[in-house]
Image (cartoon, rainbow, N blue to C red):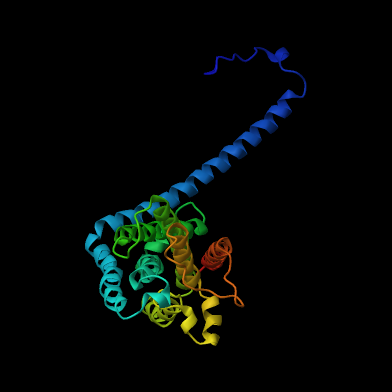
Length: 304
């Protein structure tokens, strides 16, 4: 009698001819399916463990987290407040603090997202990564766990800065906050994937930091987060169109304009005199992150 209340027939006569082979084949299929399920469960547990590690680090480094949040907050309050009286509202369509707010959100999520790449290099140097690679999971799963953890931590820190929306003159509209949060998830994923794609090819944290100093600041200034891209020379627009941060900032700004009609979306990305559709921008940003993560996975799967 089984747990379902079904009783198997007794005796060999109760078993039709050919049933044993079918049962054996069915048992093999069930075993294979159970094996795949067990394997998937192990992979998901590994991702969960890596995400949990990042959340524990976030909770245990409160001072470090507060300092990272203080930087964009000071930019918004001091830089935005100081330049608000110097830059006419007519030039931006909004007050300068409202214009600066999407750029500050981008600054907030990019720092913890980039730190994922730094930790990957330091884990390799300390030998911790070698211990992780001994786990009975795919190497790509470990990289995916790092990416998921970095995305979650970066989004969480960006969500804290949403509390300053009122300082920038924005309403605390639940729909607006959800839209901004969704954009930050997308931006956090893309920046984390790009950081991992860079980190898997490097072996020294100093080299990683040097490249970030050379690459990230120009990308941030070419994102339209501090000033309109229309004031830049025409040839610079080509660089801005290839800048993933520009798409993230433009998405944040256009989401604000969807919910706050009097905050016009200042001209951002320009494709031959036309603005790209909102969903296309989101799709391109997601594709950039997915391609970066795919390349990082292929590179990370190579034996060292």
